[in-house]
Picture 1 (tube, rainbow, N blue to C red):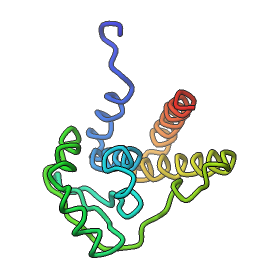
Picture 2: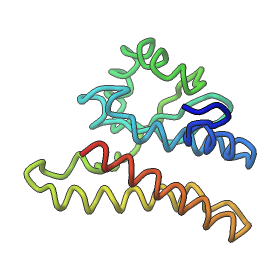
Picture 3: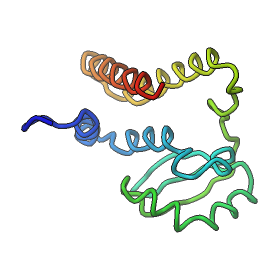
Amino acid sequence: MSKGFKPLGATIEALYKGLGLRDEFILGVLKRRWPELVGEDLVRNSEPQSINDNELVIKVSSPAWAEEMKCYLDEILKRLRPYNIERVRFRIGRINPGILSVAPEDPEKLCSERNEKVKEFVRASVSCIKDEILRTSIERAMMRSLSSLQKVEK
């Protein structure tokens, strides 16, 4: 990397921090990386819901899954440390199935739903920016960045 240039992720994170949106940015990252952070069994019954003061609220599908996740709490907190998450709280609620509900043999539907989720994430991420020009610019930059990441993943 050339001297003086920062990775796009670091630049976006700094921008969000300056706008007071850092928690929302981190939440979006956690939602995207949730399967690799908690594993296949837990991801079907949990999802990151909100962050406040370095505490992550995890929505779980039932009290039984909250208890199950407590068994893995030390490992989960260790994996969340790079995101400055210090505490976790559980809340019972309906889990959005997301892309996990799409059969792997239907890649066209998977791509379509994934693209919609990316757009929804980006719109939600920038929705509280009052300046329309800034909001639109950040939205476009995020869409380009996330689109290029999706191409690399394929």
